[in-house]
Image 1 (cartoon, one colour):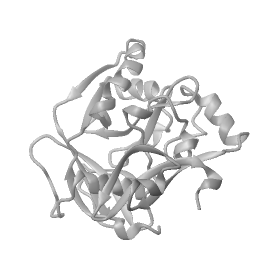
Image 2: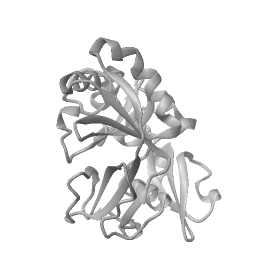
Image 3: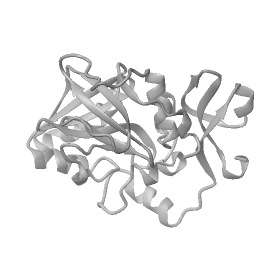
Image 4: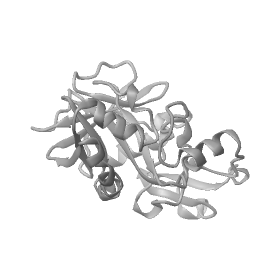
Length: 253
């Protein structure tokens, strides 16, 4: 990973993130999620979380989030600005599975660790690279740091970009498909069966030829990336700006 020198290790209170509890028996919630989200939720366990997305019928991303199973609860970990998007989409299906949704009163902690560093028992792994792992923990009492240095929410967001996790914000709702953000290898399962938007997303995987994509570009001013569309928010570490840039494949050089 060429930009790994910019990774910051430590713990952070993710103040802009909330947890949605999907309350119901295990199999009912699992079946509900399997039919709606892009990832294969059967792979989630007590320490392995999952990054995932919810799309519309045409395969455009409505929101990105994480799925974890914590203390016998299915939880959706999502930006507060996108929680209503998720709830509006999922609520219509809840009665069919006897599931309810409620916002959990808690803190969400993020941990950026060196890959082989041990996690706490109630930590949930969500992203890994050659040297780094990112995990989440639901913290109902105080900010648990496990002896790690504190990092900022910007550091956390930069870490995710470096690990090729490009996420949408409210400005990109319904505008991009997973392949255009590079999410087909991290947030989409092509083996689990049907989910909302699956037919079009699968067609792009097996039959489509991608003309545009998103890449992380490090730059010092906005003029350097003026020919691209910026996905989500850009973040700055000292003099370096980190931007998820969307454009024609042949325009990246």
